[in-house]
Length: 116
Image 1 (cartoon, one colour):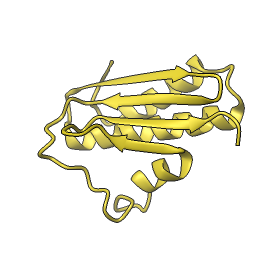
Image 2: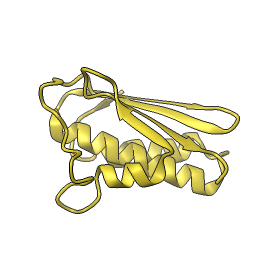
Image 3: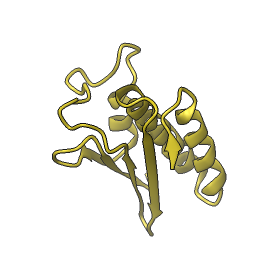
């Protein structure tokens, strides 16, 4: 569990890189980038709140979730595929095979293939 502070995305990325050292380098890099981006999005929506990151490595894919238990009325911007810096959900879209918000929440799930 993380606290939604300015460095939460970086801390989550570092933790993922350390915890999943046995993954192929590209998959580990993509996982760390996706987690960092989704955690940072949570921080922007709900500063100071708790964020939970869950990652399960299967035989052919990585399944992850980032939960901030935010207010679903505060809809994250997805329409243009990114934030003001041109990154955001476009990065998540590019690095994952699938991702979505759980209906009625701000919590996100994603899948990253192990073999490309």
